[in-house]
Amino acid sequence: MAKQIIVSRDGFLKLQNDLEHLKTVKRKEVAQAIQKARAYGDLSENSEYDEAKNEQAEIETRIAMLEETLENAVVMDDADIGMDKVSVGNTVVIHCIDDDTESTYRIVSTAEADPLEGRISDDCPLGRALLGQRQGDSITVEAPSGTRKYTITSISK
Image 1 (cartoon, one colour):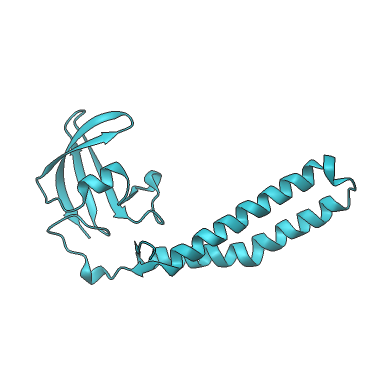
Image 2 (cartoon, helix red, strand yellow):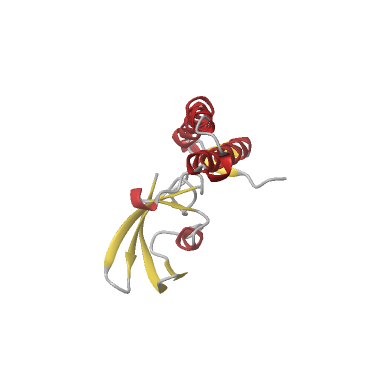
């Protein structure tokens, strides 16, 4: 059995929209690009054809990944998100003891993660370390940049 993936309602809808866009728009665009490249003749030295076929493979891989994610998705109900311990769906403010900075992250599934937008996966080192912790707890995280120490300042929905 595949691992269940917890996603928000918005995240689920975004994944569905992405899948629909790939199937209805991107597939057609790449099919047209392949057809156009075939018209150039000799396929053995046709870089446009190779590029279009590679793009097609990437799109089909992404479609398969999205379909699997949606199949195994469990839509999270905001009413089920507690604030006593960190779980998927919580927003967490942490204080980095090492460099005296504060950061805010929302804990999400890997399907919704976007660190640049402040959404970290429950499967990344920091996300895993935060899960199950309470406000005031301190954690140590092994990250590619080295060991970092944090204190959980607040937990919210």
